[in-house]
Amino acid sequence: MGMNKKKLLPLLTAGIILLICIPYWAGTLGVPFHPDESAQLYMSADVELLFENPTDLFWTPAETSGLREQYRLLDAPLTRTLIGLGRVLSNTTALPADWVWSASWEENSGNGALPDRRLLAVGRLSVAWLFPLTLWFTYEAGKSLGGKRLGCLALVLMTINALVLLHTRRAMAESALLFCVALFIWLALREKTPAWLLGLAAGLAFCAKHSAVTLLPLGLVAVLWVRHSQLHWTRYLLRAGAYLLAFGLVYGLLNPWLWQYPVQATQAALTARQELAARQTAEMRAANADQALDTPGERLVGALAQVYFAPPAIWDVGNYAEVQQSDADHYLANPLHQLLRSFGGGGILLALTLVGIALAVRGVIKEPTERRGLALLLLGFGLQLGFQAGFVTLPFQRYVIPLLPWIGLLMGYALHKAIRLPMKRK
Image (cartoon, rainbow, N blue to C red; front, side, top):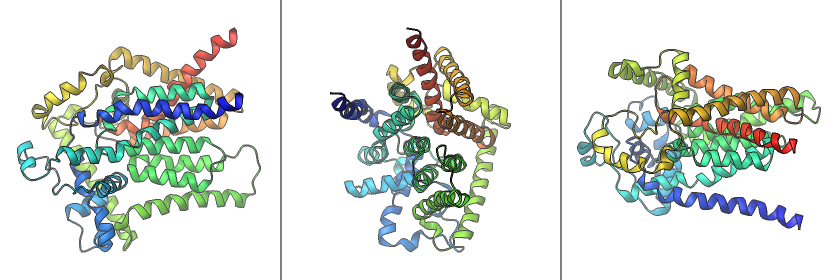
């Protein structure tokens, strides 16, 4: 009987996750449109190009200023690849033009930059199908840290997060990013994970969004931290090498623009990224100096405000607020889409996070069996928060998405311990 229960539990968990995903998927088209979705739908044509004429994707010193060339240098490739594959499977044509932010809504629509409902649905579902896997890996990560109760708590916290419900149902990078981070955390917490597999997960996360670069050093710590065996130093080198090689192979395979001139193309990408960041920051400061995040302290406060208190950001900037207001009102009318997005609700979640951090630190010091997992959790959260404070100068809510799995596990850990204490007393 115990054996049957053990076999049935994963099936029951999977069934619950699929039930959760039905309204998530059903509401995909109800999420207000973001113009950056047009860029992904436009660039998804690279998938056909890869099969038809891959040399057209290669970066060369002679071709550096085209729009597609610039996007390849700037943007992580995983989302446009998933959307492209989804379009191929559904026999849907890529968007013919990219969105122009200086043009009006009507002008962009007339130029072919506004997707119709079918293309938008295909693009969104091409990344939204990852959501049940994200929930599953979140559950498994929590289970690795503290058992089934913590896994369930982490799953619930991810499911009801208003930022997740908004930003991962768009044809943008956040769905693939959240999935990859959850996958990486689960694999990192499992001490027996092969080094190459963790490197593959870290590479996928970096190819989902470059802000996941913090997983690269964290993964090295994870593959070198082996508790129950003493390895010869050559084995540590082999594990680190396998991890880094897998990371590099994934990145190279998903970025064919690197294939012909890898060194020069990488230099061009770094330069393009620096120029874009400087230009965006200058434009934000010119439009609204109060929103510019000039110091690490301001960036840290801005990130925490977005994670806990700010309402779901239907738009990053208000260029088209008047056109989209009715869609925004309709979306936000659902109470779940604004759940706990208030000073009181955010305060409770922030307090839970702080308690989770304190308990995790205590566990690292006093619980040898939990030390590795909790230390990796704290280090991962600290690295990502440090990245936000050091490099994210724009107050865009979707930029805090890679923090959410770490914070969900910390909050879940606090609740897990709070439930466990009364049970121990009994």
